[in-house]
Image (tube, rainbow, N blue to C red; front, side, top):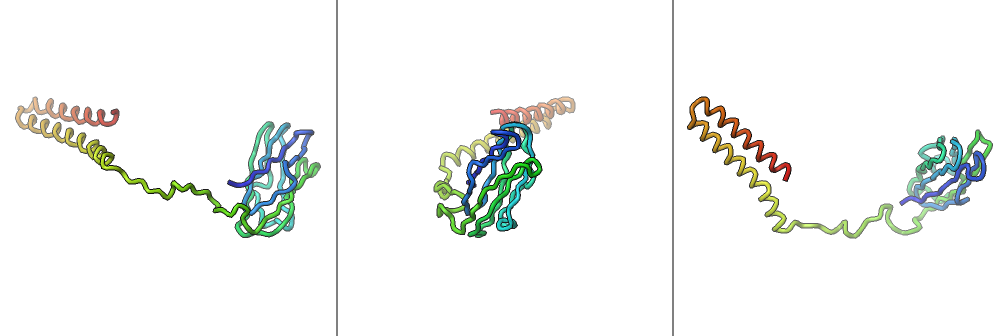
Length: 186
């Protein structure tokens, strides 16, 4: 899970920027979370010359509405470090400015993979015989019932004169619909 650095806006005064930490050390992408405590505000993000082209915010011009929290993903490619620079945060058309020192390391700090994998992912689940038998029974029973209904309707249609054949055909269709409805709603 990527690191998250919260930046509070308008907490103590208008257009104020207050990052929770002045520095961030990372070996991977991270998230800037802007929490606005006051009026709507535009925030501009600028990586300095050292970080430019390596540390890439998903958005460089961000509008944060009143009492809104907005997150911006900041991409750091694997193996980009080591390097150190500053990510500038600007509001009020340059009237207020703050910076976060970003240190991109070359090695992972936790030594683990990029994605956490639970051990249960490697366990293979095999169905039991009772599960297989139940699923076969659930499929075969309605098919057999529908087949019997069609055969009975066909036999009745052959045995009954013309007017009755229509009634038997309708009864066969209704029986098929009844079986289908039974299977759908059980």
